[in-house]
Amino acid sequence: MKRTLITATVALATLAGAASAMTSSANQVILERYAPNIQTETLTSVQISQLMAIVNSGDSAGEKRAQIQHFVN
Image 1 (tube, rainbow, N blue to C red):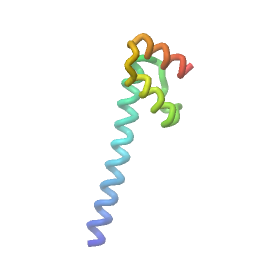
Image 2: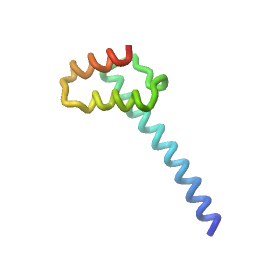
Image 3: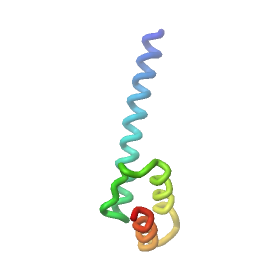
Image 4: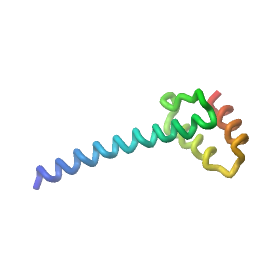
């Protein structure tokens, strides 16, 4: 029983780490549409969340691009 719980815990931790990496890669690709030279690895999770809020806003693509580039620079 203990072995099963330990195995499940290790598997869950591994999958959570992979999901986190996938999310950051997805964010990188999305943000590169608006700021091609962006380096998301230098940003905090809060900053990335703020940038993703801009991406998901109802603004035009040009407005999003300007806001994101202003935020990054």
